[in-house]
Image 1 (cartoon, rainbow, N blue to C red):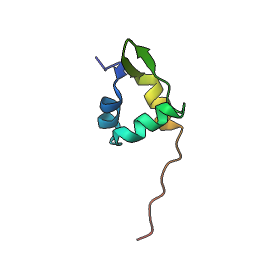
Image 2: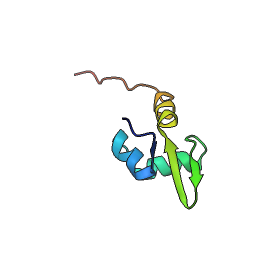
Image 3: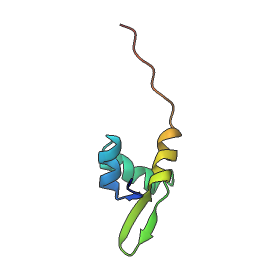
Image 4: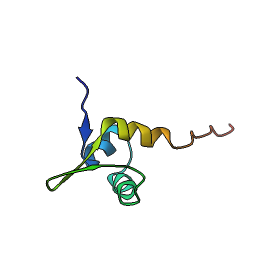
Length: 62
């Protein structure tokens, strides 16, 4: 079964991004999260939505 929520550190590890980028997206309201007690968790579907909202990169000419 696929994990349904992630901490910022887990989301960073899963996406290959730095945790700071995840935290910044949460702070800037780009990436929604749930406050569960003292913990902030990102739902899997929200993480995928946020990733897909970015423009794909272009390969560089060789």
